[in-house]
Length: 555
Image 1 (cartoon, rainbow, N blue to C red):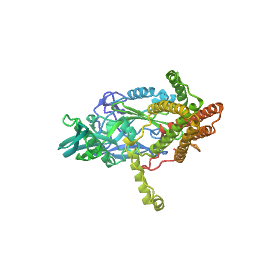
Image 2 (cartoon, rainbow, N blue to C red):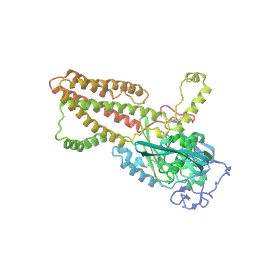
Image 3 (tube, rainbow, N blue to C red):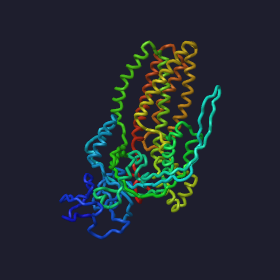
Image 4 (cartoon, rainbow, N blue to C red):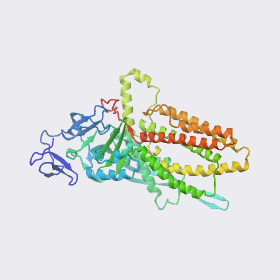
């Protein structure tokens, strides 16, 4: 579509010079002055080539007649169908500031920190698959203008009494926020867009199609009203934080809830601009899951789904266990655990794995259903309403079925592997110490019945664990992984084994040792199952874009 005025060569946007560059004679042109060689464009529209994936229904656009030989969203290696279309111009664009080499270096540095990541995620050929895509965003302009009234209080002690004085902070607020942005594409997960944020709105340029030369663009299909409440809350929260940092109010506490305080700040969205922000985007497909890696094309900030290599995890766990064993051996040099204590500690650990497994199952269901992605939920709800209009039977069948509830990012449970490992180690040490002291106390005070007491404790854990297991079994049916029963079944079995041994109270210690070893093996199987499901949690289901025509469930 765009040709060099000097030689007729192909033009590309050059990130280093921030100019449009000819691939033949290297001439440079101002993006704002590059004109099409064919028909003149209308003021608010420009010609694009729309590439449609026949497998997932995803669409990307380009300002030139290139060939797209793979889908960025589902990773399918297929020639995407193409069609010409008139597209409405966004108001502004932030041009790419980071080159592909910058992007690859930033991702490589990020991947190096993930010790357990499979080698293919760090392979140079894989990293070379980044594609520059302009993602559509809504840029909000928010103003605070009006009266604000907040309840304050301050307490002090007088003798045996604590006296609390109440105050009312009233005044005028005048604040303005420019460039609060949220992605406008249901294909771009909100978790990703929020993680690689923010973008610097000061570098926005008036949109010109020439900025897209050599890059792709995603399609805006989520209305700006989707994020209105979220934008208002962010602006209110920021303003409230600034008020609280003022010297006059710093020493006071606030008498009402934060939500009530925020509602007292008058907030109005004055304007919303359609914009396009740069993202280096890459997908990695394995079986029926896909992992995404993204780099902010302006700042270089990285987000990537990072599955775990099971073998690397096992080796790392063993290496980590050695210094922990030596440390605990030194700490408990004069504290000797008897077989009963060993078994009880293993029972506590088995119960913890049951809980962790169930939490992981629940989080996978939430993540795959899109409850954290406002754009995706909007697209699903829109598709559902459109189908209900066309299909009365479908409408009747789904009449009592509730629509998906949007959950804010603040409500999301962290799935950070570092946090998980830290919590496992922390709880293991705490329960080891507490459990050992508890059993030692039982031996000392109730030498004739402590085994029965421990059996009753494990019986309670078994009953609670059975309820947790039942919930995990129900949840597993909605997860796209071939497994008939949850891996936590083995931890439940280990609890049953321990309970039987405690109630039987055999005189020979070999039974306790046998039950401990068998329980440890069962727990190991459960933990391995958790690692498999962690890779499900760390990746995403293959996309099926309900907002576009097409899409194949076999993608």
